[in-house]
Image (tube, rainbow, N blue to C red; front, side, top):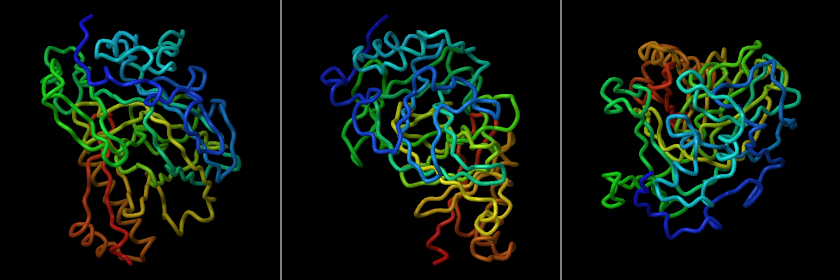
Length: 372
């Protein structure tokens, strides 16, 4: 296998790799992503057993693992895959190697690609409640990531990937903090010149267990959350999800360093994160006054209220998001529906979360400051 040029050659794993159990762990509890603690391609359901149990209000630091570099169409050998991009073996996460070396089955093109850590029982959560999942902190576990186009999917199926083979673009990270940038060469054969773009780490998958005894595929988002791919779910954001089963059984996965709304290639900048999440149970008696009849995931940040809409048809997803936004404005601010629709048209952006997960997603950015 030919080794491509890489800007990682001068870097040491000691300062750049958050190995399991090493580095900052700020949560009340800590959950690794060992093969026995993850799902690969599906999501927890009511029949599954939690790997951890915490009280409402607890924070948990959770290691997540990106699926890029471990899939069958990439060889299911992360040492060889990342080595071909100039990454030394000691800069590949042990969990990636362990999962690929395990006997865990994964059916390419049938199972979802995602690795999901959990589930976590939130004691006292019952069907009818809401679970609030707040992103307290995210940390990059590696200084690189991958953007892939595969399976004839993405926004241009049949046109890309050219020739039908999976195309994986390798991206390195330079700088730190707010100055960190992803570096994507204009040509894969030469690290310079390159496009440099800001990072905004978030978890593409945040969810609760689905009812019943059938595990959902990890690709399609739904009322349970899952693969929402909402770029606003960065540090400080909260996602609200209806609880379906006793204990909620929460989970996270699909870590990103960055994503453009739409995620048109199929993946965005996929790379492993360590995330600290706070879990809060909102009892059923408090929901109506804050959220009305919540039928889809809702999120919020300091700046925005973020209703969502989901459907295989993008037009219907937009309509569902608008309806959710009208309802939320009525409950939060007492805004009459025709006035809410007028406000949304004049002042609110409706963004395409993603168009590549079979069920398409739309989210609105309602500025909280517009309402005092």
